Length: 85
Image (cartoon, rainbow, N blue to C red; front, top):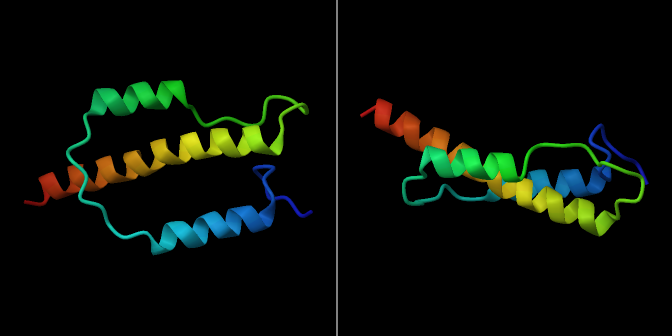
């Protein structure tokens, strides 16, 4: 199975990117920076830590981190909107 530089199967990465590109803009409530910082510390970007990691655990952690990334993107969008008013 072909892998990309993250160690995830290439097909899974392509699927995640396709889903992300079709996601509509959100109307989330304002995201507090301190919450975002806490979540970033709880679920940091990281590489697989051992060869014993299962695909399921890697996908679970990837999903957790994806939520943090999505909220970071939304936070940036919210901040840009505040500055451009």
